[in-house]
Length: 248
Image 1 (cartoon, rainbow, N blue to C red):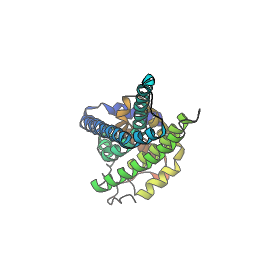
Image 2: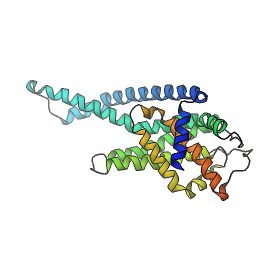
Image 3: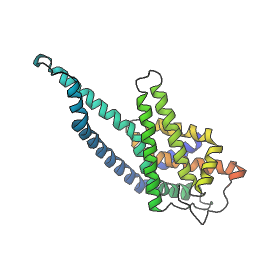
Image 4: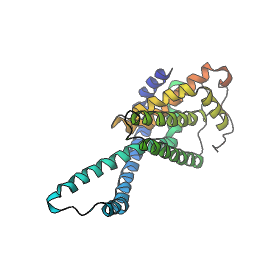
């Protein structure tokens, strides 16, 4: 089921109907990442570098190459920090465009089903910012485990697999359900949703392709929600809800 949902999501990535969302997601993701890069760089120069200089004695002239090495390590550290923030950026942007992706998926692959209802702009922004914060905290925890051999990679996939799977699935489910119903449905199929989240985390780990993570993850979870809804008599979809309750 998960791989079927992933296959359908990949098919939708470059579909003509998705093209406008594709460019909006890519453009906004790059814009946010560039902003974060400059923000992290300025923070490092303004606060971290002066603090390090108070800890390290003056470098003699004959050891000037150490400054060059330190600069390279600092650049690697900034790139690593940006990489850890990528999943948070992905979640935030997906929260803004998930309804756009879902509408395309529903029209293309489920034309006989009742369409879902889009979240209002303000609740979508608030939910996306909350998701961004949760992912930042989760990845800070994973970052602290980077120096632990054998645990660092596992921590990245477990943290992002759980958080991305949970939030993206609930985003997709809330097009048809109240937030409480969406959480209950996700909890009932927590194992499946977590495995699908691991697939999103794996996609996130692929350089350059990870810029498409919001599109892939949104499509994957829309398909997974549809497939699970058809197999689960307790949560089978009937008609779309007329009222949409904003997430708490």
